[in-house]
Image (cartoon, rainbow, N blue to C red):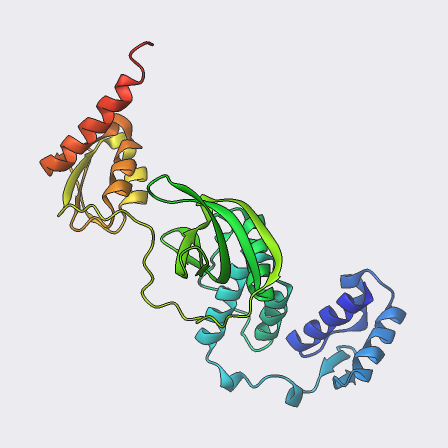
Length: 301
């Protein structure tokens, strides 16, 4: 579309000191005559495009029109671009992409030192898009929710914001059933519907020390012994814990303060017979009880 090409040409002019009509024509697969008309349209919109004559001539935008690079440090620009890129991987946000292009006009040509792609984390992109649209439009939503106690209930919620925390997406909103603010894990939301009703209530947008729907069973610490077949997986799961590589090729991991016992038990079970809990005894007993329950399900095999 012509409008998209005009916007893209404008960013190309901002990103380059001089760019020729032939380069632009090749880039957008149009004739040079079309580029000339596009440049005229950009000038008519109030953007000061100037032409440069000679072998290395072409078009550019006067320096006074471009953002002053001294306003932001290079590291600030890189951080902003990284955050916007991570948002774009999830929401395909055209506004975020446009802002990235603007920031790139004042960034050096060096490669970014950090890249984040949140699109692969466990969440249905359709759900994220529905929720973000509802938040933007201040639209009430309805869904069925499964809490950590495996209880299902219908909820009508005024959505406030989305949160990415503990490797998962959450919705922060005002629950009309509870008459209070709640945090909902997206993977536990079923049959999400955006309702016609728009809410008028003014909600706080800043989240402070929110509590997530976790069971609070605790243990003081744990020592795990992993076989040599599971080293990479163990490092993935316990990268922040104290680790010791034994001479026989095994790995011992010491966990000082497990944040969630249920998660720890599920993670240990995912290793099968490639891990042994050395201590504490309470955790060994908990795992034994779970394994015995699992075995009882398959006695008839």
